[in-house]
Length: 139
Image (cartoon, rainbow, N blue to C red; front, side, top):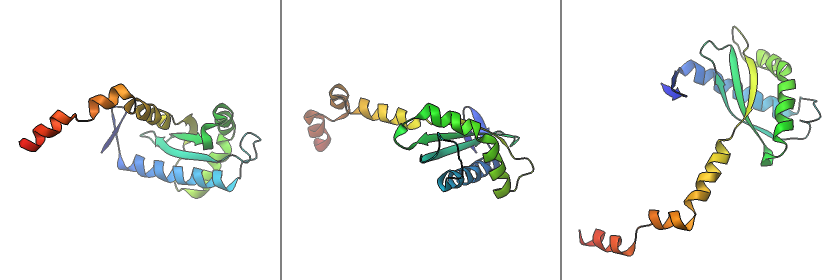
């Protein structure tokens, strides 16, 4: 069992979430949405988290290049009923979950960590000094 936000996530939740992610990605890549804020935009669905009762799903998205995030997010919220219907046609579930959308900020966090790790004052702490290398060789 995996943990997410301190809660245990079942294999069923993970499996259904991944299936929903695939369906959403296919619909978005086919360009079926006619919202002007989405036409011609490439959107990556990085993860779909689903509630334990499988009635609510949150899709984490990233627009290509990170541009127009707010507009894309609002457009997806406007199109959630259409997307829910598309999921209903593709995935066999007793209840098609309600969709909500959030920006995936994990890439931003990873970039910040990468920048911190490459600062000179951090590099001096994580790179072994010449004295430590000599000690390792004599041990």
